[in-house]
Image (tube, rainbow, N blue to C red; front, side):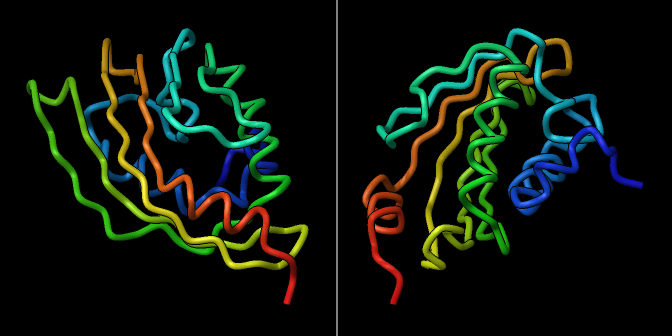
Length: 144
């Protein structure tokens, strides 16, 4: 049974499930947020209005994702490529997400590359790269 604490984040479930599934036995925690260290640093190397470049801590990450799921609903996450290095302490994920911008109904597709550092069976640092133009186009396109 899903944890009711995370019910509001259901629109991002395909992404959360993809990440949690690939990390398997490298991290502890049932849900995506449970795999994060309390003091995780989640760094994004792109500019999207309303999304911070650096998010400090699990609580901050949950707050940021609350804004995300209020605006985007994902249908799927796929095309996963995983690179495990350093005995699983560093994991590089390449993947795509597919969804809808809720305010306009515009389709949203994007590609990501995320570099994760794992310490004490939790994600301590997350560095994210994405196709900024795909995000910009989806967020600024008017409904058809």
